[in-house]
Image (tube, rainbow over all chains, first blue to last red):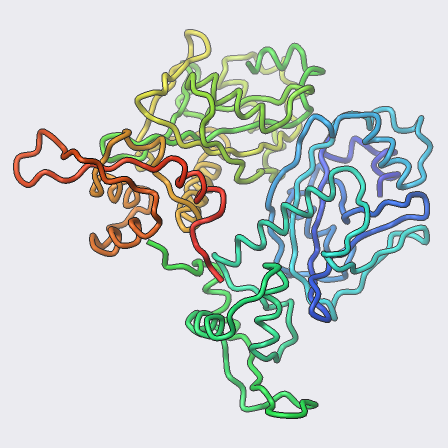
Length: 251
Length: 251
């Protein structure tokens, strides 16, 4: 991808990139999709560049599709990063080194790249991580155990997580992150994992029920020794409605 | 400003601009600071370009200072706009025309400019609108009576207002927008104006008091015929704390 841009730079929006923070939920962990090459010990967020004939939001959709094989996913622009430090030899050398591209090719690349950050919530089991070529690996990594990231990608990841936490107050979260049928304790665990703290069981039950997006199924969770908890699913229509109109009636 | 960029384009981040939606509150109206030149019937949001040696957030601070004479103001990045339609002859012609610059000078300018949107909440009485040169006028205009705006500036303004409305659920608003001493009805009117709907008096009083940011002063509003309402001010320290930590305890 970078090589392609270096060779055909007139086809891309100058000095602009996109970075995607792709979240999935598995084994009670909030995981992030990260990329590594054999050339560098650092990891990176999946990202890309913006073709001159493509909206930036569509370019983000392409990055997400390219890395996970998924379309129609919850994907939201959350911030644009344009500190002066992004304009440095060190920054561009680390990017070129990451991809194993000889440094002299990258002269124009020492300009600052402003990057637009998007975050996505995807179904861990549906997503198929896609490396670009054989020198890359793509992996889901627990957000609490993220290794060294290239450039300011840690800052971008932290901001995405902060936005997601804040948006828990504005919209429901869970669709795409949980299996189709789930228990209230599973849903609570998802919220606890995102927020990074324990929640009171009864308070959570009361608040999540009050939103009116849950359907209680006539099934219980199997493979459970004692009292089997009820299974639920999301009422997709009401869920979408609340995402659109906002969670809090507010003022 | 545009002329300066046309003449010294290597000093600026390529194909990137900034637009600021500056809100003020006066006469029970939420007002927006807009710019007009003698060359065009359309109005524009105040904006600018990003010097290569300046963070984008600092460039936004400069735009705000340049247009209002104010510093240390609540200013927040809310979205980045990069639709393909921003890459068009029509778009660039309208920009050049707005500033009365001959079209042939603007060839490089027909590339798409991605623009980063910021919104600011400023004290109407402190702000001194600053035109750039004698061909420009800068005016506060009621957000309900905004005239034709250039390019996609209406879309940017609408998104800023939508963000401000949403953020009323996450943080208190009022500091910088109201005079230092104000009544609860004045504060309620501000909220109603931003939200575009009436609020229940008792509910509002209960909710706004519960936040714990108001100081009841030992003064009443003067020049009021009947029962004079109490005056309040914000507890600045607590206000900042709530802005930082978020309004809703949420989950």
